[in-house]
Amino acid sequence: MAGGYTEEFELCEMKTKIREIANRSS
Image 1 (spheres, rainbow, N blue to C red):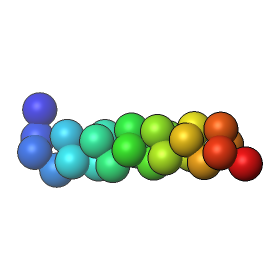
Image 2 (image 1 turned 180 degrees about the horizontal axis):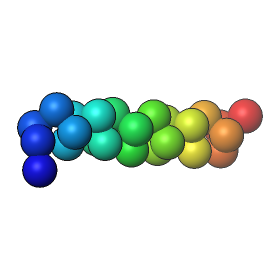
Image 3 (image 1 turned 120 degrees about the horizontal axis):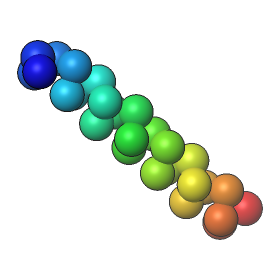
């Protein structure tokens, strides 16, 4: 597994989590 791929995957996961929290707040 390439390091760049892992970074991109983690970024996507973070964005999804942030979106979930934002939806819960509003």
